[in-house]
Amino acid sequence: MHNAKREIVEKIVEREVIKEVKVHVGISDKEMEEIKRKAQEEKQLLMKQAQEDMKALIDQQSHTAKERSELQAALDREAEDRRKIEEQKK
Image (cartoon, rainbow, N blue to C red; front, side):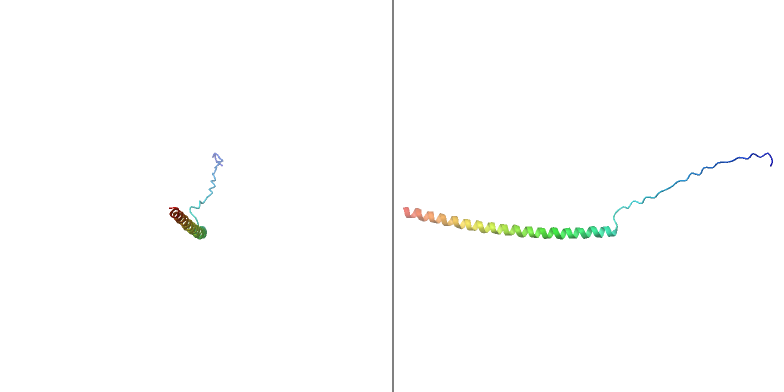
């Protein structure tokens, strides 16, 4: 060997670990279908409840109207009876 210097070169190679994280933006078709199905079921349930509530309200109002007309008729009869009594006293 001639006078060549022998060098040991240390080479550090950095190793970079890249972890890829996929962020799922939005929802999948399956999830969308499930949400739509649940929304439709809830809509049907709410519609049914609303119809039942309306029926109950209409029944209640009709009973109230019937009671009101019965009370009015009773008051009219009493007023008529009082009028007749007043006429008899004269």
